[in-house]
Length: 151
Image (cartoon, rainbow, N blue to C red; front, side, top):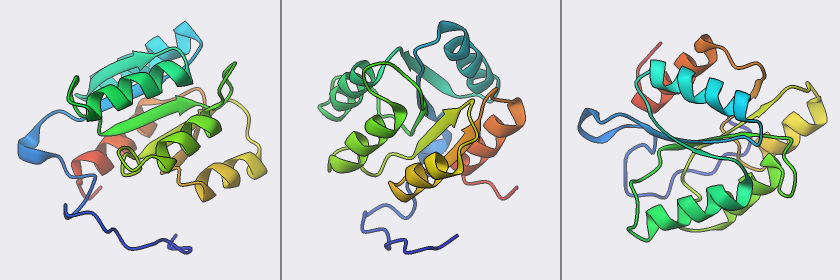
């Protein structure tokens, strides 16, 4: 698991831990409305606050807005891999390139199980790669990490 991971240089003890028990805020990105609604429903079932975006540029717009003080902070981004215009991989790279957003965990979803694609995303800094369709158990795993519970 620790393959060449750099030590956290951020001042917070862990980027996953929620301050004073707030609901984690997750940005869900998917060009497919049905998939987007499903992700949103599963996250809300796991007591997350959810913002949705239909594509990468819209997601970046929202993310950068939150770091410029115009929105609430995002604790995690969950994005589809296959989207027109900007793939989930390209969105991941943009998030990790920016000093404002590089600490935000990014989870990639895809309906295609392609090991080279999965490895590429993880090497670029994705927190996790989940195969679609997303299940409540997948979301529980994610929110458990967000809440820093041992489970």
